[in-house]
Length: 288
Image (cartoon, rainbow, N blue to C red):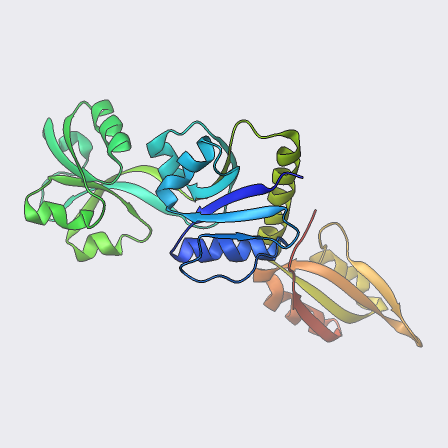
């Protein structure tokens, strides 16, 4: 049986989030510490290798890993020959163009023809400025991009931001957005049929966990006379599950999945309809 090799970031919040997501999906990896380089499930079906986020597309393209978790921005920069197989609902950020606050430029078109650009994404930056009719001199940096204009190293920066606060604290101003990025799952293009099947199983499990995080499981005793009205505002995935109560012919038990952001309103409405014994539970996975 072929083991499915999974590459995830070796550090940072994204690493922990992905590792927790895989465990919640039922892969059941053992505990690890920051020095762990590889872990394997007890059944030997899945293995995780921990590498730099920037290296994951290369690992997957060359078959060192079968699937990997990285950022869309990184995949776009590297143009690795892999399949993008899933968008995840976290790790959101934007790649932007920023100048000093006091600069007069309002957009990229206002910038001089010959422009010095500091960035960790040289390929994306070069392609972007050339399309804008500029002649960029790309200054590749691996960190602290925001400080380069104040040091005179660059005129503008192309950088990743999630809130813009770091740019603002360095007195930079955004004049354009190049792309939006989230965490994604990629796969090698030459997986065996067995590994393709395992990959699809992993994707289904991941989706079930992510879908479940937006839902809650609600259970309540409802008067039969109020059941029809309760079902109107609590339709569930398709319809609620209704069960009888032993020795009680006036009430029933309603089981229903609700949107997490509608729990408060749902409880309030149920109470007004005579609902009692209301329980709200988390949902670990939800397979539609």
